[in-house]
Image (tube, rainbow, N blue to C red):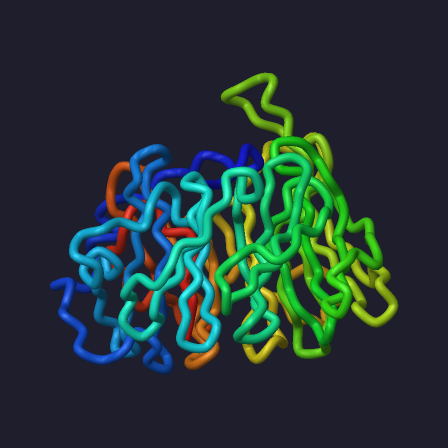
Length: 362
């Protein structure tokens, strides 16, 4: 589930989606879900409805929906499927509102185990792995923690206190970087955790409400800082502080670049961030525009790569250079994955589950 800092999405025209949509038959895939070049789609589902789901897109562009249900006799993942990652042949499904982490066989999506602890897992968001034995999960809508999980025993081995509302994370060398968004409040920091001691060694201030974090080809981090938002005049929503794109030098732990995407006191817009081109090109969206920017750029691009569509999620395909976006028309009906060429030409759209927020490539 997306927090208060994300806007209501603007509507896409139905005829545009239908005109470019492939016909899907929800094909029965007889291979493996870790097929190289294929992808898993994270479909949040409707909040409170226990209908989060996973879709599979083959490298040929065929779609199979509800793959967890199909593999497990109709059982469901749970309420708000927030994120997915893979550690070897184990798939990690973080199910936010159900307050659990579901482990599956990534090849078949058959259920393996559930990690749950009502006192420790309160608001799980994202998972990253150090190796096949250690997993880290960001957790908490207020005071935040990172949960160190022993994948062999499938238990929480340690709880590490970080900033408020931790979101996406990245591992570089022996350090874990955690974006602290503030959750239902405001934070502006990155927590740096030593993976040797599993303790916080540094805290770096970047910008208000850092949410998304990507690693570039030079092993630096780029962070989307959404900025504090004013909801007091709802449905008019305004920025209290700017939306920023920040470059963090991971050697010096200093901010090297900071770009303002949306100024303070402006109308608030949905924003996304991903990286492609082998870590050389950043893709970010503000409202209904998507931009491409070299990691070496000193100014923001003037012309959008894509315009006229407001997306729920944004990812880059590392295998063919496609830019892949997700669109959620509502949280009661199927969403879409839209695939674009690297130059911004729409190739097709694929119908998936409710509330698709990310496409994770094998």
